Image 1 (cartoon, rainbow, N blue to C red):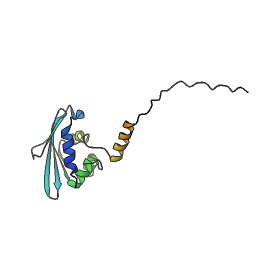
Image 2 (image 1 turned 135 degrees about the vertical axis):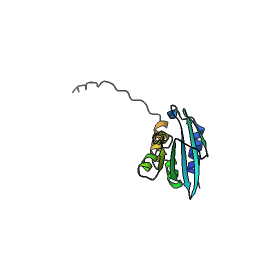
Image 3 (image 1 turned 45 degrees about the vertical axis):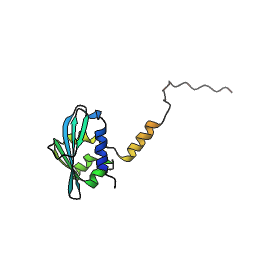
Image 4 (image 1 turned 180 degrees about the vertical axis):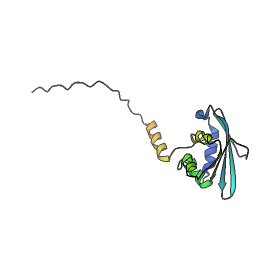
Length: 138
C-alpha cells in the first residue's frame, strides 16, 4: 500500500517553497492510522520547510484520519473543504491551514490539464486591426 502522506511530506521537505517565503511558523499534522497517531511537524522558516516526526508544540495542529489525509495529499480532497465539513480537525492559528493548503496538490484533472497546457508549443496569436473587406470584381 502506498503511503501518500509520507510521499507528500518528503516532497514538501525536498524543495524550497517560495510562496511561503514570508512565513515563519510550525504546523503539526496528527494522522490517525487505525488508532496509532503519526505526527508530522512542519517547521516553516521563510520558505524553507523542514519536516520531522516529532510530537512538538506547534502554532497550528491539523488532525485527520489516514484515509482522509491520503485523499488530501493526492489532491482528491481539498483540505479547506474537509475542515469546513468537520472532517479535518484544526487547532491553533487557522490561517496557517490556508498557507499550507498551497503545498497540497490540486485535483488530479486540474494537474493533468495544466501539465498538457504547459508542455504544448502553441504559436502566439497577435491581434491585428481588422482589414476592410475587399470588394469583389465581377
